[in-house]
Amino acid sequence: MKTINVELATNGYPVYLGRGVLGDAPLWQKHLGRGKVLVVSNATVGPLYFEALKPVLGERPFELHIIPD
Image (cartoon, rainbow, N blue to C red):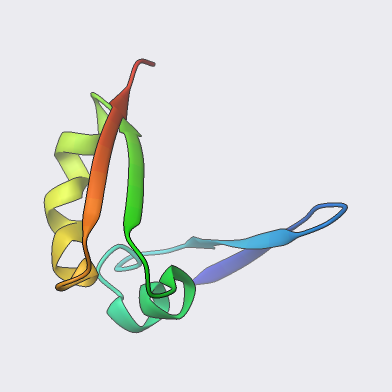
C-alpha cells in the first residue's frame, strides 16, 4: 500500500492506494471516529464498491449519498 499525505493550511489527510484497502478494517477504524459515517459516491462507483465497504463499517450507523457525476 502507498500513502500520499495531502497537506492543507489548517488540516490534512492521507490518501491510501493499493489492493485490499477497501476491506482493510483496522485502517478504516483508525480514521472513522465513533459517530455516524457519511459515504459520498456517484452512481458509477457507489454500486461497484459500497457492498465491499459495508463489512468494514460493522455496526456503525451510516448513510450513503449518491451524487451526480
